[in-house]
Length: 352
Image: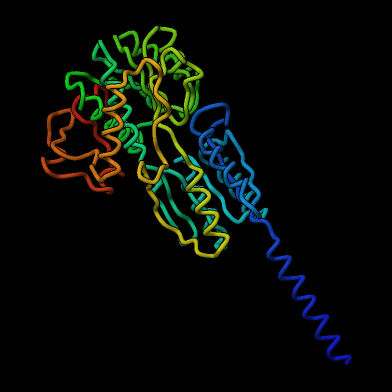
């Protein structure tokens, strides 16, 4: 009888232990390069974080405005030491610091956005934003009258160059004579610098301003000048309602929820993920009221074609010097897209 009581106590203890493990909430951390604010890159990631926060058995936290480099390593390391189960680092410059920390904590799932390095417990992920860039180029090319489109760009890395090229191909698909002028700010988030860069493009005749920046500064510059704009990351129409045509935007929620579910059920494995329009990770914000229905129809048709398998970087594509980079009937591989360091014909600017 005594033995049965002891066994019962052991089983009860094990039951409490199992229940305790089952009740343990998964801790998920996010590291952002810029302020969350009301729009932009980090804002879009945080909307995705909120979808994870709504999951049962999951808690999340974030650190915003983390500089790339040593500071990001400190933040990621701090999360790892505090027992986070999943950590997302959302800027290109967080890649090497995250890889360094990942090697020290093999039981934690690390995920880096926009980079290319991996480990057994570290994925890289991004979205095929160039697909949405192409669609926004169709809008810009349709709406410009001066045939000069300005593009305020962050850093000359393949991600940004690829987006500029896709945007330009979209412009050219409806307006072959239009050019896209690029100004580099060497910033991800600096509203004043980005607004001034947009003004410099407006001064040379641009009547549509596009951007690869986190702030709405370029949008505001366009509205003040009385011309059009194409936003980025999230719907920026509230900052420039008279100028904002549309914006290539992120929808990170489905991806983040999927990853966390995989970690919870023990099926997550490190991978290189690159979803796009088909998976709903990228898209366009609502069209501004100034965009004619005929233009919207062109965009929707192009979107359907891309979802159906049409490649943005296909056909005959030449660089700025007229050299054939993609032959007629061919398409760029993912490896070529990920390493893109050249501009297509029609871009005015350098990749430096």
